[in-house]
Every structure is written in structure tokens, then in C-alpha cells.
Image 1 (cartoon, rainbow, N blue to C red):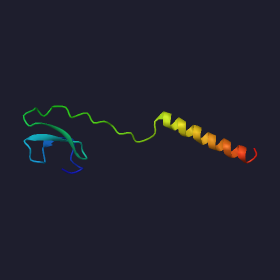
Image 2 (spheres, rainbow, N blue to C red):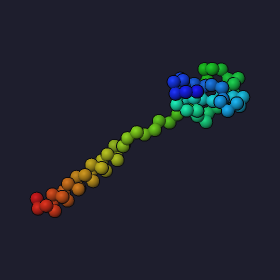
Image 3 (spheres, helix red, strand yellow):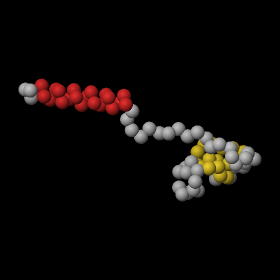
Image 4 (tube, one colour):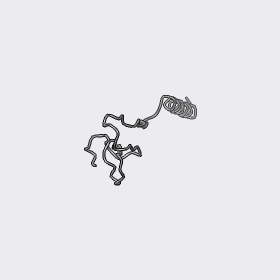
Length: 77
């Protein structure tokens, strides 16, 4: 299987008599018997977080403001 293959159920590459789900990038741990119909839904894959959530952004903003205030106070402003 290569990264150009669409996600879906394929024969298990390890040789087991089952199908394994290919997520489009790699094999998952999800398997099913070969006898199930092809319209069986794919497993739910959790999305990974790629950035900061709003609480983390707020904390960083507060820290940045505090640093600027300390710098201004220590320089005499």
C-alpha cells in the first residue's frame, strides 16, 4: 500500500484472513472479517491537534503583556 492509495478496507498485509483499514497514510489497528459487506463504515479516527487552543493563547498573551510591563517599569517608564 502506498500513500496514493485511498483510505479503505484492504486485505491484511500481514497475511491474516481479515481486512485491515488503510487511513490513506498508514495501516490502522482496526480489522474486520473478510465476510463483512464492503459498505461497513470505517473506524472513527481522532483528529490530532495542530495548534494552541484558546486557553493556551490567552495564557501566552498574559505572559507577553507581563514581560512588556516589567521591561517598561524596569527601564523607568
